[in-house]
Image 1 (cartoon, helix red, strand yellow):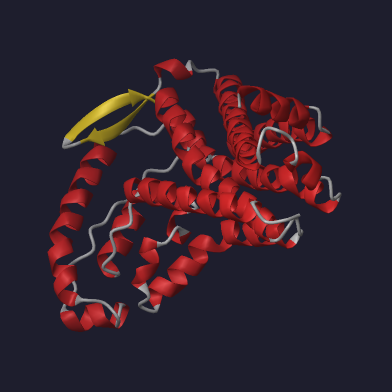
Image 2 (spheres, rainbow, N blue to C red):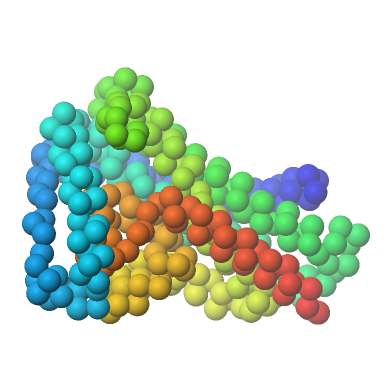
Length: 316
């Protein structure tokens, strides 16, 4: 298995697209940070606790919702916002903090790179009709598929950490500050702690690999299911871009069962604004969280990987 993975990594690293993605990640992130820094204005955040709705007011906002559930959740919402107000009062936002806020958006874009790699790592073999010869090797189809999926994940991790390092060095250059001394306040349980901002966003890098891994496995499944048709690439990109929009529309119309699917969790940038998340959860009787997203995406990733194994056994 190790030799198969190394062979796939070597093959992918020899492609022009590999070098192009490296240059694009560095160039686009550096240029974007320079432009953002040039137009950046530090503004204090105004936090307001929404007053409790009457039943009539609540049903005007969400006619499909449960007012009794809303009342149960309101105290949790109020308690959460009280802690956020305390945090905002002790947090002096610096230029580094303000610039780093854009980092998760760039991590989201890494998913598009992973979709492209996931599609191309199989589509060429399907379209050139060479896949049957690949599968005739003594390695076996399952091992070949596993090696390709692991290769995609490893490349996604590589691109993510390339972005992390690019952000780190660019911010050091733009701000002339030592980022290792910069901290950010976060709640660990009920205690407010200050953690190094570099470690905080390094953790974010690991966290965003979860949705990227899911969309990679999903793209591999679609590529196998559609036998390398370009339609698999189109579907994956549309799904990745529009998942949050579709989820919000369905939730607005009362289809809250969508919270059990992978759709609300493909775009982790939604959870960066935790105050909006908890407010939407309150209004629409939801329980969306990044922790639940972590579990749900792992479950669906496993399912689509099993489906991929099943469909790759078809004649090609």
